[in-house]
Length: 295
Length: 270
Image (cartoon, rainbow over all chains, first blue to last red; front, side, top):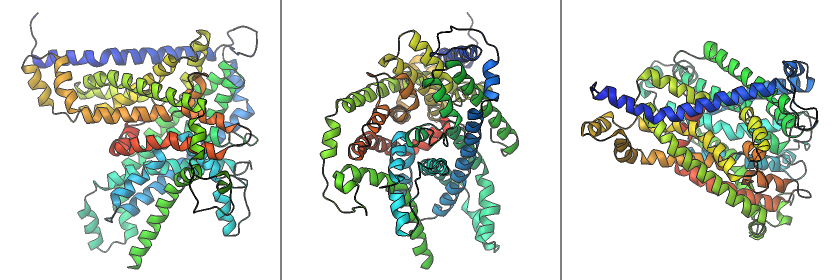
């Protein structure tokens, strides 16, 4: 065989390094997706003895008219929107605040990392402990300023917000760190020049710094949005969807249908629906809300 | 001056909010039952290791610890070994192919885990595979591979192209170049990626909750079984929590710079 030159050959050889892996991943992903769709179109439930039948789109029709599912969907949307916006806004504010020279900056940066590497289940336990109605620290502090105790995790009107607080605590640092590292790459003379021209700090942040942070913020928001759709650990540990289903999100509802009711097909339908909605939301976000250059 | 004081006050507030929950769990684990539930809270107390004694003699906890170690280390080694090959191959491709490959790898991480956990559960139940370590190791390796690829690609691309080409010019095979020239250069990145995979697997809850059985429970699942014990034993629970998370926080600190990079690479790339 004739040699076609070094580059051609070596590129082909390098391909053999990833092709088996990517091929296997693709195969597994497609097989799984196919199987998932197959499950959705049948009526598999481990609790009945009816046997497996093809039921077509029955599960999807059921989902569209399932009040509990629709409420869970609404709650998911609410949680995602609130969590993402709080984390991004708070994160950027903290990053801007820390964007100056001070002693112990390295230490602060390291400490801020702690919540996001804390085991999520334990973060949930911790907040459950802090939010405890009788002996929790939150109510103790509220009592010192004269606010009556709140049954944080037992009151259907506030439980979702208690979980939200825990989520914000755990994930705001992610936005802070991402934004901090971007801020360090911003040329300081640009800010200086604006300051020389007599622009106020607020104007500098709004017109000079924020536009340069747009891309980072968009990426951070996207990551946080995807992850909060999938949020499970905090909910499971803190409330298990209760009280009175007030914290049941789609993901949690899918889990309950699958592993408490063992209604495999219907749970799959919920999971597939969630995936499709997430992907559509992502595509729309990518297309319309993202600044140019962000994929 | 006033500005400086204000700055440090706000900084203290940020650090307090960040660290207080951790501090409270760790100190509660060192308190007696009476101190733990005292109202108003006790800030100064005589520490006791009683709670740790209780946890470390609990067979369920020991079992969970062993399972977590076995599963997270084995799955991470497997994932890194496979992902390193793939990442090396991907980095050598032209920009277009590379983008589409990275896009595909990324897309594997966007779907909610529940989408593949339910079929896996149903299938392994029918095949009688539930409650085996092998199942969990395979699943976690499978999940860690795309993540490890996305992260390793960023390390591999920092290796000067000339190094590889010089090796190939000298007549070394691609495999030799990969093994003897490129891998030693990215050693630090491999270690960081490995630690992140261990961290992720150690902390993971949902898959473990669904797919593990009595013998294969990992620590996050074990600790939830402490929750339903007649009322919650916060002393033992916080001691167990401390034992579970502190080693991971220390590991995470060691690869500080990689954590954010890893999370970004693992979810969506900018």
